[in-house]
Length: 282
Image (cartoon, rainbow, N blue to C red; front, side):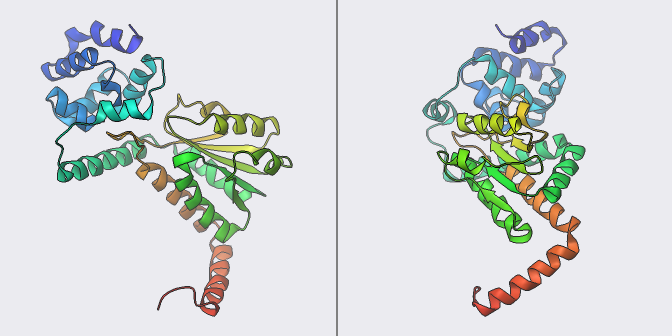
């Protein structure tokens, strides 16, 4: 039995009745419980959601996502999307139940991310973006959606940002990368092997790196000069990108505010161009 469950057993005598319900449920459902959100675990264990959050802190974890990740690591294998889907899906849930559950999970992820954000790391990320000669974005599979949003706005105002869309051609793009360049990599469980490989290669060239991922146990973390963590847990086989998207929005906003005069002139020029080409509906 792994340390996380041994700790639950060892500290049972200190637990309240509600905490015992949670511990017993987690121990009895070690194959499926690690993939439940706090709200779903609370429902299944018949306790309040706040009790689940406090339970994680009681066990000396940084929050429920931290406890959850350690329980997932205890399984010692990667679950397939089909397995996660089967373990988190209940027949008979109505659309109303689903939307309330998913939006609640998103709010929890945003709250968790706000609590764990490292302000110094965030400020350092802003400085690295502003000072970078070239910015490269690595975001594969579903994470591509967040990467594209970041690329669009950074390149709009800074004119030096490129998202590497082709995994096969990434080596050609990064062959001339220098120390004054920055690579921003997105990776969330299940992490793509190519993202880790690219980061390894980039670090060998001494380029700066910013990693946006979901946990300190992420395989991307060792290769990030800066790390920003975003909670992505949702009671589904997909990831919740509400928190990563908010971090990206915050990065864009902070960068443009720090370069106020430059960005204002750039946007004024763009407005003239957009008017000339009749870009927006009037």
